[in-house]
Length: 99
Image (cartoon, rainbow, N blue to C red; front, side):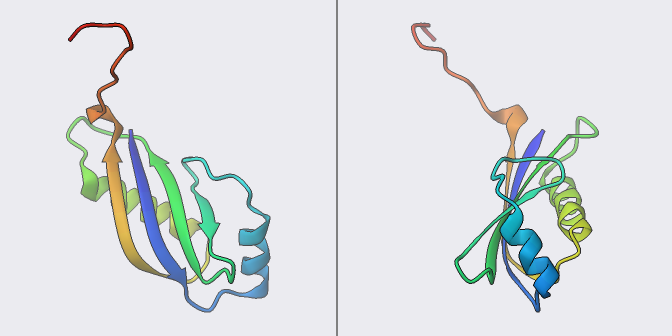
């Protein structure tokens, strides 16, 4: 599982698109992706959770699938920065356990 964060700016967002982004209140990582935005709804952060389809999937594949999820929303945009976290690599430390 990957968590992909895409920071960008909207490029000519329509009134309907603006209303859709403003109506979205979820900020969790989901497979369809969620938006947070600045006050003017010009800059955004898109959070998307992407399942690893194969064991050797990496950041490139996760980014491509996250961009496809962003495209599915239909809003014109420009990507400023992306960040990918491979959740398979996250180690959880349990309280009270010795290493």
